[in-house]
Amino acid sequence: MINSEEFLKLQADQEKFAAQHVELYMRCLGRDSRAGELAFDQEKAHSIALQAKLDSITREHGDAYIEGIQPHFDILKARHFDSSWNWVRQDALLPHVVRHHLCEITARWNSFSFKFAPIAQALYPTPCWLDVPSLLSVPPLLVC
Image (tube, rainbow, N blue to C red; front, top):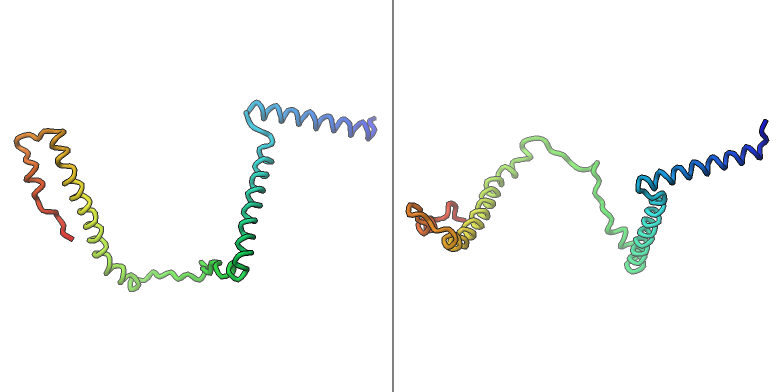
């Protein structure tokens, strides 16, 4: 038969032994057993710093300003249109948007090709069947 004092002592010894095993396994795995506590301390310090910033903004501008800049958007109040008549404007603007993007791409390509052509001629002499100046004199495909 075991009395309660011996039982509590045995239980404390087993907990100490288990803690030593956990610490040994953590060292074997290359982990820090206090990593969670350290991360919590860092987050707590970060939270305190952010709260200090918010407090300074509140002191300077007041609660009315803070309440005024809060977002008012509610996703539940957003409207979703699925019918085709709602897309008329977008469909009407699509050709103009595509033409605008093509004009930008063409302008970039034309400026690049005119800048790069003399360098390419200097680095790679052209064969007799390829006349680069005549290629450069071709007008752009799309005039914006």
